[in-house]
Image (cartoon, rainbow, N blue to C red; front, side):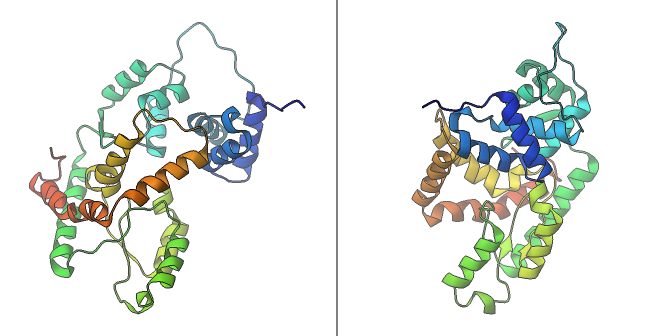
Length: 281
């Protein structure tokens, strides 16, 4: 019995279908992996094609390439970083169809550096410095006034599922006036209107978080940084395999690990304030 092996154009057609269905590139990639396994397109390739579709480029066949090196505009690179500032040089190079050194030089020219795995401006604009300083100052005042209790940073869990679980496992949850204090960054899914509206219905408090500040996000400076060590040289062959490893890794961490990442926040806020909003070492 022959086994169907999809070609690139066939898979791109499926991506276009999911794009029209208003699914995200990540959702489309996950479905492809579940269906076609090792024959699926990579996550980076899926995001690249979704970006083309958003620019009204629906041609699924490979375009003829000339012998001249591929060129791209700064705004293309800036758009990719705006969509996901955690992309690696390799991922950016594949999307833009250039080598890593070309991307690295262009990033340097744009004044971008990596902090906690995120591309951020080497020199913050005055308004960004002021925002970091003001936000951390307000957070420190809040911490002194109300004490320190932040639940979360595992934002990957769906909010509805988290709320339901809290109601099931903590009978007094609905009676507590402070309920949940959420801290997440400014990634588009986190600040989307449906998410904000749902958080308002839950009456959860969302802490302020300034732009270009992975150094004061526990998920970046603590959780993902630690996870990266465990992921070194590890390869996964399916979405389920990766999910199983992550679930196991989190389950093996005791509560003190997560508390450390949260309880060090006031110290980091103070460093931002003492640095007048600039990045600290």
